[in-house]
Image (cartoon, rainbow, N blue to C red; front, side, top):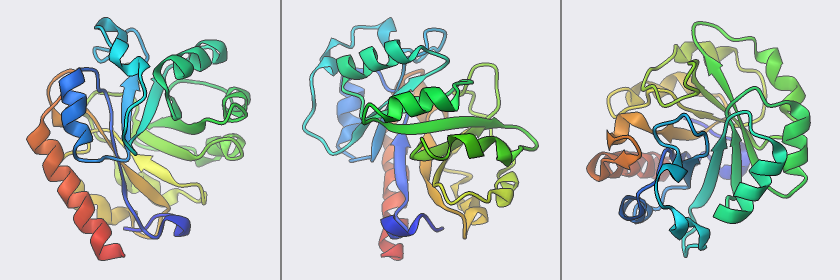
Length: 223
């Protein structure tokens, strides 16, 4: 698998849908590149369904915090980013390129999500390219992610942008062997969620550990 040249073929790992303090602490020991926090109230993993005041403090970790938003106002996103010390904003709805631009101008790293089912018009990405750091491809759903369902990864063979991308949507220990289909594409990393849970917002540490070890083994081979 290959990523953008600047990162020397390093595969990044993003663990999304976190909320529980101890569970977060346990996952952080594995040193993932990103932890995702859902800021979408209808989601079963919405962080403010419980007391997450501990996230109002910075942590001593290189892991970046990602705030995941669905069609939220720029003003509210910035307020949440300040409150929870988000390094990255993940736009998971129908946000416009202008909204991505406004957030990027605030010094935030921006991921823009697009849902895929059986096909996708990649020209839709072009207006966002100047303002995002990476795209993220998830399985198209009304829930805006977290379904555990996969899409046909072969669709990504049509990807022509040089912008790096994450793969999401039903990524599991069973199907990561199929990621060779992304060879020669600017694949940035994996975004995992429901397939690594024992309950919504509660990750199975043994499973995440196995995935983390696999990613590290891939990265060691690519050095």
